[in-house]
Length: 350
Image 1 (tube, rainbow, N blue to C red):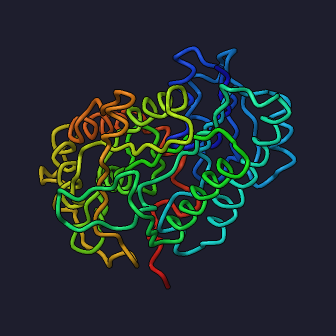
Image 2 (cartoon, helix red, strand yellow):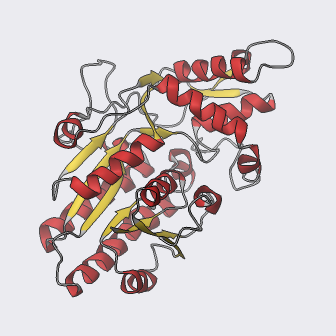
């Protein structure tokens, strides 16, 4: 299969690209190379004859048409998006332009190509989204997001992703474009850009800096190892039912405080502090993010029952692998330290 993967130099997109190439698929990686993208993420597969890179912004419709005409993909996996909630609070405009207008451009370019190709039955437009479109959950562990949960986005980021989800469904209903959708929980793992919680904690710990936790650390997230997510995404684009949406979760709920404490214990074992003190001494509680959702949790029953997918690791196993990857790949994250916003508190709402 020839896949057009948007955002393939980003965190989740690069995991999809690496896995797809290893499975024998052809991949066209389309990425604008904005601040969070890094071609080093796909360096291991860049020499493959099955891999092609196109530096294109999804806000550029003419360039998208050219890519479709040149490469004639069998399916699209649309991951390109602005994704950091804190950045969306400070600057929502980029999120509207990329996540909404960019998705509109992708849908129109895909629809044009699909129609000109004679509407091939096997073509799919796979839109990759987030569980944040559903809003916030109560503490009750019996309550989880399902594919039928009403949308209730609370941040500029989640609102822009909710809008893009609605566009994809509208293009399926109005124009018959063959689509599948997925909504995932919080990803973590290798190549995670150092502005999100887990890489921030790992790198701050190693640098002897404070480990910032918003509010009292009680906010709960379901954590999904990125390579498990990539497995699920490839499964959905190949075998997902037309027009169907699938929630992808790690089945690993943890509070932010529990997560950071676990990271500290792993770091204590793998890279002890010179003074012998535990890394947990560096934990610092900071002013909460505006509109911080209390809890996300995904019910992945549909994906498990229809396509047979389950996550392969617990969050503790995944975090240990993640910490080891950062310890082994200092050159990768050192090169990103000077990029815009890295190491700075964003999203204070001021």
